Length: 204
Image (cartoon, rainbow, N blue to C red; front, top):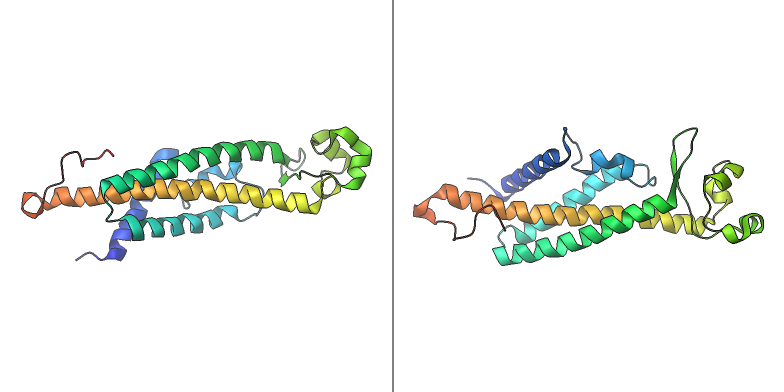
């Protein structure tokens, strides 16, 4: 007799399978591992942290929605996809504007949004929208051009947006897979143990 933990392991397997189908390859961390180039430069261990975030989100989905009705799953999907789309667009714009790559080392760092007093004296109206030319004069050290506070807030904001994307993604896919797994069980059970309701196929 399968336990709830067995069902959760099956959900993880299905989730991993969907991620491999979507991005290709064999992934240790679903989705996030294949998007390392798009991940925020800080913190350095953001991808394994994302794995934990995804796991926790799937735990919540499994605990609260594994027996949910189709209408509830539809609402969860809708309420997950909307913030997923919005957070993705905002994140891509923010990571494009607030990060830079050192040409010599190819390392990526985060900019700030408020210039230091010295930077304002030198670059004046160009602050805080400074690029690689200005960074080159500061040996590509962001702290010389932007305040530590603004850099810290930018770092945290990028990491939070990144995490929100994967939480929303996990809720959307997790709820969808929970429903499909339950529907599959009903179909396997056969007429004697209850058929799936009309329309409860592989589409929501």
